[in-house]
Image 1 (cartoon, helix red, strand yellow):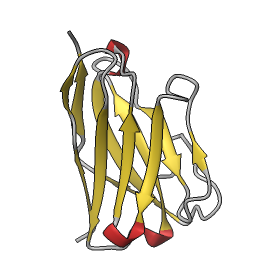
Image 2: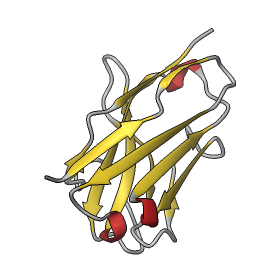
Image 3: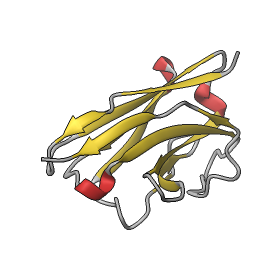
Length: 126
């Protein structure tokens, strides 16, 4: 069974950091681009980062660029999202998703992604 499991969420103060993990089981991530998305209450799903399957291309929206960093460790079948300088507006449920292919490019739009995790809550509050 193909499965993605997110972990690492929690409560953090503004200005703090968290590292989210996205672990795959039932398939290898080597051939998949991975995206991180978030959804806050009452808002649509927003792409916050993605990484190509070969790891050479990453993509970020302006809202998180310079604060979030995506990376992957294919040997561990895991993708990470390092989030620094967190703001209250970063509060959301964070999801990872997999897109087969995407060797040299990955989209921030959620439509093409095929497999999704269940999400992990990130709350930024003092």
